Image 1 (cartoon, rainbow, N blue to C red):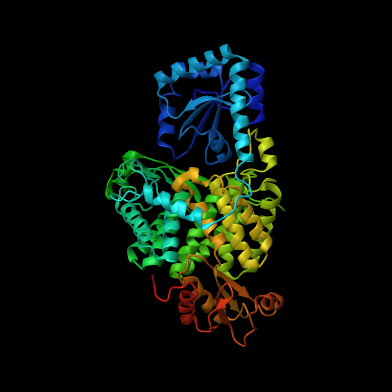
Image 2: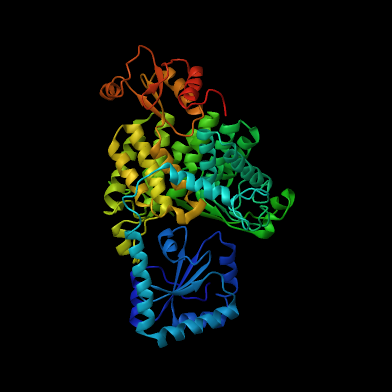
Length: 582
């Protein structure tokens, strides 16, 4: 039992802090975080530390996965975060892991400064919050989109690429799924071989490095050394999803079997360890355990596996199901499609507010409504599910969730805010943020939805999110890669593969599978039923064929229609400007 009198992040805790004029000690932790467990067993287990905290502070503990909105505003550079706040939630100071003796000293110093500084210290903290809020409202709205954004992101990747060990930067190494995807997609577009080489060198180094768990499968969160050794051993669901996506993309770009095998083994780890068997919801993470992961295969079998956070998070689940769909497209193995459908149907049945958007997590009941990430990743998944199945229900739900994004998360100055106004008020968040990554993902999802439905209102809405951050992306360096992918897709026409025929005709399914397996990073697969889609077919200029046909076009340039599945891949390659496999 904890010696600290931990409270939750809620109005009652802040009222208590104001009533007793006590500063808040905020601990942001994660179930998978090794140093969080160390701090619990050392600093927070110390009697004197506990006595000071319980007497002088209001102590609040927050799980970063369950409360990414709090983490985004108060993280001090890692986990655990130890932040000291005013009773109004403004930051006084903070850091990450603090050992017991130093912690005692800091606790005493902060409480002394808080009481002796009086109004001055709280005014200074409040001013910082005002500056943060102002920065969000003046974040480049109205700026234009251009290829320069993409070239700037590629320049940042080139300048930070580690040509000796792969990856980016010269210190600790994280998988960078968006960076790798940008490199591979732009290589396909431009045939600049250094882009491909950077992506493949990184994936090769990860695959062969200690960050890859060759025994149990899956990838650890990051490596502390430049050569991908000495990893931190936690495994997060969203990280597995990004890695799977990258290895599938590398396999599609090169046909190298080892990339497909790595993706499959990582999917195997997810299936065996992070998948809930009945609903096929995916668990959030598996904790770090340094001793366990240093054992060999035989010794590991005798030990209990590191604990699993069995919370189901909407945004991470949507990303994982999207990875399953990419694996289905590359292999056409139906089990991958079935798993993604089962997961998506569980999320929609369990995690959606009636008539509204998605909740954030499920621990027996849905919780934490009102976060942008859950909406945009779900829209992205639904668009992909529609392309893989032709089922209109997924497209209808994507339309509905896009309405939620517009009504609850749009900023009048352009772009999308990370939480809705209801959440910001009820959860005492100091401001609403406009994150680059989520505006990029929102833009990408909405522009894809526009291409699938023909509704250009979605495109205008998505582009507003991209333009709103066009004045800020440079400060993110290569971390703007995901945003750059979205901008690239906003500026290009997709390769459109229109399948025209009755949904019940098995020939449509054969054409769809060929369309899905055809490699083109930016393509959309649309299914038209002549009995219900005559008006849209007329608008698009597609004739109604006697037998099912695939029409492959980019902008107004179309390849000859074909009813032969084996001819679809060649038509896609010609439409994309690639007459042979890259």
